[in-house]
View 1 (cartoon, rainbow, N blue to C red):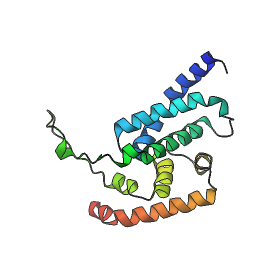
View 2: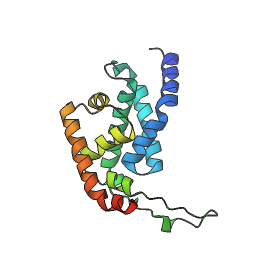
View 3: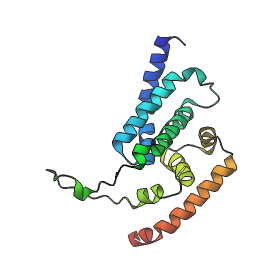
View 4: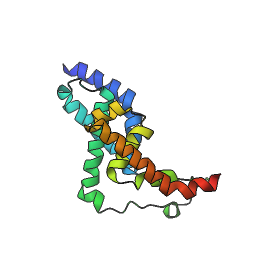
Length: 168
C-alpha cells in the first residue's frame, strides 16, 4: 500500500474507532491521560504494522487487540507500577461548579476483577464485542471466553449484591 493510501486508511480508522478504543483503554488503565497515550500508541503501531494485517479478523478486532496489548504493556511498565494514581475528589482543587459525585461502584467492581475476567468483561459488556470477535481479539477458544464471562458475572454478582439490594 502506498503512503497516501495508508494515510487515508489511518484517518478513516481513527474517525471510526478512536472513541471505542479510548473507552477500552480508559476502562483498562483508569486514567484519561494514559488512555489517550495508549490510543495514540495503538494507531501508531497499526500504521507501522499495517502490512501484517492479513484481514483474517475485522479491522475493529485487530485494533482492539493492539489496544489491549498496549494497555497491558503500560500496566507492566516500571513507571506505572511505581506511580500513585489514587487521586481522589478531595485532593482536587476547588472548582467553580460543585462536584457532583457519581456512583462508581460497578466500575470499581469490574476493575477489581482478576485480569482475565476484567478483560472479557470490558470487551463484551463495555465494547459490545460478540463472542466470535472476542475469539479473534484474545486468540483463545470460545469455551475459555464463555467460562471467563460466567466467572466474571458470578464474581460481580457477589461483590455487587449489597449495592444492588440497596437500590430496590
